[in-house]
Amino acid sequence: MALAKPRPKKHCRLKPAQNLPLIENKGELYRFKGSFNGFCVVIDNVDDMKKIISMGYFGKASLSRNYPEFRKKSPEIVRNRVFQNRKRNAEGAKCAPQKVIVVPDSDSESEDIADYFTNLKPEYQLDCSGIAETVNLGLEEAFFLAAALNCLDIRHDGKILGLEEAWGLFQQSDKWFVINYIVYYHFRTKNWVVKPGIKFGGDFLLYKQGPPFYHASYVVIIHVVDENLDKIERLSRRSMNNLCLMGLNRLCETAAKELLICEIIWPQTQPNQVHFQDLSNFTIKETIMKRWIFSLKKPQATTSKQT
Image 1: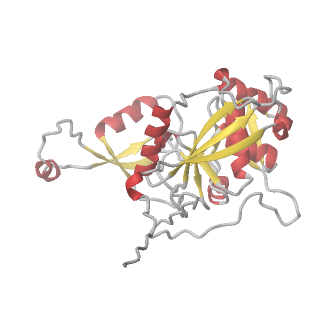
Image 2: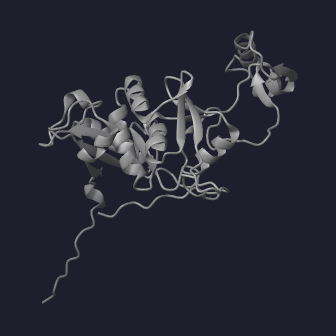
């Protein structure tokens, strides 16, 4: 079966950078610093954000939809209700003010666009909310950087977490963390850039080089089975019946992606509590699901001999 080639994005001006880890002049690994907030690991240093999101495309910018904009930008344009919400949230906060352009609200969907822009009276205001761009790392990304690449220090409650502490804390925060990390580690070591797949109904998306350069090639769903390939119900997060799989496969076809079923074979000797050093005990089986269309099947060539 022929695999689809990754589709490059048009008009991409970025150039691929080297992958992490980053080695400094003294031969030591450059270490990033992040803080765990109970949901993700936050990188707030501008230089660290630039490096970690461009050298392997880890994390997601908090304010930008695509690649974050780090250079000094023009004043932000916000609606009045957004500015008022920021003022309420900034009460008592001591942050450096920033200039913003406030425009009136447009609550009526039927309002004439031409009239709205004709009567538009923007105002310069000072925003003291202190909202700044950060890069948020998923738990799988953060632990991969800390354990596999050894280039991230995770701080929580005023101290740097060890690998044992981070592994246990991440399991408490997300019950699917262990399963997600097994799959994340599997594909990252195959040089795929792994991103969340909730947008397309999956667990992960796989990119070649990174989202700025290529569209996602695969939508990954995780299926945990025992050594007899029977479904383990307590570790299942979705139905795997034909109806659900066909619906998800049609969604992937619409988005020009392929559905990849990633089966984790859970050994009988493995207890429920998994240590991060036990990853070699698991076997991963990859299956690409495609819909067979009879009308697109090429007819076999036939020859007839006239007599």
